[in-house]
Length: 328
Image 1 (cartoon, one colour):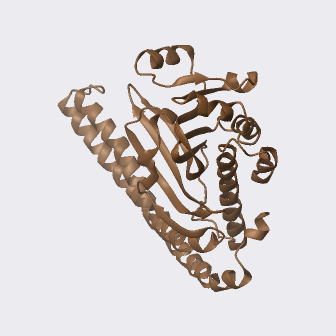
Image 2 (cartoon, rainbow, N blue to C red):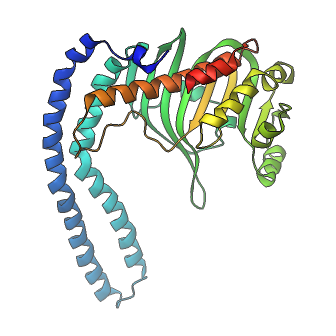
């Protein structure tokens, strides 16, 4: 099905035309606030930082790397982040409320669609850590749920990090959680192949899953397939799931996608630095036709990719190649 077939009807677009017109007037107002708030907040921050620096120079005899100075530098960086957030608040609040109102309408081809922002998705608690690695910080942006082609799903933009010496990003992108067509009797994960050192320590200190191979040298060089149910996993890993991952590798260029199958739950992790469903910068006018088409196209491609993996996970599908072409 093409993007054109999934677009809202002319009646729906006409009904929300006033919403776009209201957004445009509010956008101009918010852009005006941002233009004077950002320089003001950063200017106040600079004045305070300079005054405190001069004071600390007197107290610490101009020792630029004294403890008070270091504290001041860290506080200034944190203040710069806060100043930017406060300065941009009129724009971010407007754009977030606009998307929350209109995205469920634009995505009318999804049944029972709901939209939330910045909340922990319900399915996230069931996501196997074997697919992400052990993280201690989690961030969520858009969270969209509904039913597509008969299966329930939850889609969320996610950033997972681990605080070590530096903050390490374990995953950033889109996670699609979906109900499987056929439950998998255990856990199967497909992830990017780890380096030999990481793989050694994982296997020694708590690696509970067995690795199996697809028999496709290129794919096995890129992916690790690990499971606690080898008999059930082998037909998938050597069959349609492997072929789906191989074909998705040609269309998803950022990083290798990841898959986790566990009972009724399927998870497709799509690494990406892209912010999906975003509006143009507050300083730019909104072309509502292009925005609607872009939003529908992005959602359709993501859901078609999830449907492809879901179908490949049944070990009975025979038209994986056709599914990938539709996802493209």
